Structures are given as structure tokens and as C-alpha cells.
Image (tube, rainbow, N blue to C red):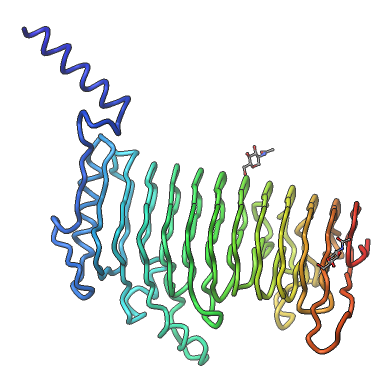
Length: 400
Ligand SMILES: *[C@@H]1O[C@H](CO)[C@@H](O)[C@H](O)[C@H]1NC(C)=O
Ligand SMILES: *[C@@H]1O[C@H](CO)[C@@H](O)[C@H](O)[C@H]1NC(C)=O
């Protein structure tokens, strides 16, 4: 009998281990409401969320933190992975999380909802409301205000999934992935007005193996921004607009800066954005680089700068010795890029005189100038310190 129980218990344990989603042993679900969270939109539920997180972390079986429908007011929270035993935590959100409307509460924290050093965390569903209006107004009036908080950030983390999340009205960036490996962001919706300053949609920096697919992003700054030390980034099926496009940069502010390599941007539509595909570097000395970039199957609708490399970024010509960027841009492939430019110069390669761009490849590019005043004006391309090749139809005619 004893032996039987032992074997039986062992089998159940083994099954639980190998089939964590089977009905044999239900994985624990921790409902934030059973930790005291209130869905009235006013009561501070921060501690309840943290308690549910701590219990999920302490569990060794895959666990779910569940946020039912309703509105939950949260101050800044740091979900730390430091003492987390669990590498499979799903945070399932049916409700809306609300940031404090007073930007002084989280505006200096950097991040509103921060995950640090976690492994195997996924966030499914949910709406984040960053309540950014008052801070944008403060910034737009040129008053002295805090920088504001990113709504959701993962720092130094691994194996992250964000699926079906809606982020609206962030104070600063909506979502940041920093110092992390292997993150999948799918079916994310991002909303903020065209006039909201610094509200980048998704920012990736010092991270590798991030994929962003099926996102709808309309915001006041870059839809997706790519910072130093980003590699193996995959971006596919994105609708961007309003916004400032998909930007690599600004890079090259510091001398010893990690480069950006192997970025694919595929099947993206830009509608009424200020930029489409942009690479931007400071006109400052740097050892940084941008290489192995592929842009493919991109549609532009009334975009101010559909294709742009700007290596002469230096507002007010301040802090830019020699006014030349040290960032080497090499191997940028544009393939099947078509649609309309809102300005005459549809393609602009304004590269560094110190480190000219090389290995730019244009293939099947067809951009026309959508001039509201005059019918049929043609788009043009401009090159400075840029070298490359073109193949197939390339309109405007390449300037290499
Ligand atoms: C480039 O990144 C993709 C993921 O975006 C990855 O599958 C591929 O192996 C990487 N290529 C190299 C040469 O590292
Ligand atoms: C380029 O796009 C224009 C506008 O969509 C279209 O009329 C034209 O046929 C295209 N040219 C080529 C060579 O594909």
C-alpha cells in the first residue's frame, strides 16, 4: 500500500511537472481581490497586487495572478524577481489599471509598473491608463514638470510575453524592454494623442531576441524606438500613426556605446506619421554602429519622411565637436517600400562625413509625392555621404 501511494504520488508530481496545464492538479490562481484589491477606481490597490505577486513568486508551480473586470488604482509598483522561485507566472488582466492623475506621484519614479529581474512572466489582456493628460499639458506649456513615468517596463528580464494589452495615455513611454532577452509582444494596442510629448509606443534597448507583432500604435512620439545595444529584433505587422515612425536612435550620444544589429521591420503601415523608417544619430564622436537592418513590405500613406537616415542630429549645434557622427551605418536593406510622401524629399540619406553610410540596398521602392497643392509633382531623393546599390524599380531614382 505504502509503495503504491509513493508511486502514485510520484506519478502525479511528475505529470504535474511535465503537463503543467493539465487538469490533474490545478495550477494556483491568485485573484488580487482576495488580497484586498478594490475595483472602484479610487482605493489604492498597490499592496494587494504586490501581495498576489509575492505569493505567485513563492510558488514553484506555474501560477496565475488574476485581475478581474473593474478599475484598479495603482501607485508605482516594482515587481521584483529577486526572490522569485517561479519561472512561469501569468498575469491575466480583465480589468483596467489606473495611474495616479497627479503626475507628481509617479512622475519622478521613471516607471509606473516595473518588472525587474523576472523570468517567464506573461501579461495577458488588460488596459493600462497612464493618465498622462496633465503632464503633457504641463510640458506643452513649457513649464517645469517631472519627466513622467513609463507605464510598463521590463528591466533585466528573460522570457517575457505581453499579449493583448492596451496601453493608453502614458505619461512618458508606454512600454519599455531594457536589458532583457527573449520577449514577445503580440496584439498590443497603444493609444495617445498626436500632441502628447515623449509618449513612445514601445522602446527596446540593450535587449536581444525581442519580437513585436500585430501591434496598433498611435501616439505622440515614435511608434517603436530602438536604443543602443539592441540585437535580433523582429517587428512585423504593425500599424503606426499618428506618431514619429519606427526609429533606430537617437544613437551615438556617448563615445563607448553598444551598437544596434540585426533588426527586421516587415509588413508595416505608416499613416500620417512624421517619419516612416528612420535611423537617427547624434553628430558626436562615438564607437556605435547600426548594421544588418532589413525593411520589407512597407506601406506609406502621407508620411513626411518615409525613408530617412539622419546622422547630423544636434539641436542648436550644441555639444557636437566637429559636428560629425561616429556611428557607422552599414548594411541597410529597403525592399518593397511603396506609397506616398507628404513632402517632396521622400528618401533622405544624410550620413556622417566621418563615417559615411555603406551597403545601403534599395529594391522595389516606389514612393510618390502627394502634393495637395499641385497634381503630379514627383518625389526626390537626397544623399550625403551615402553609398549603396539599387535594383528593380526605384522611385524616386536613387541618389547614390
Ligand atoms: C537575427 O534575428 C532573428 C530574430 O529577429 C534571428 O532569428 C536570427 O537568427 C538572427 N540572425 C543572426 C545572424 O543572428
Ligand atoms: C508606383 O506607384 C504608383 C502609385 O501607386 C503607381 O501608379 C505606379 O504604377 C507604380 N509604379 C511601379 C513601377 O510599380
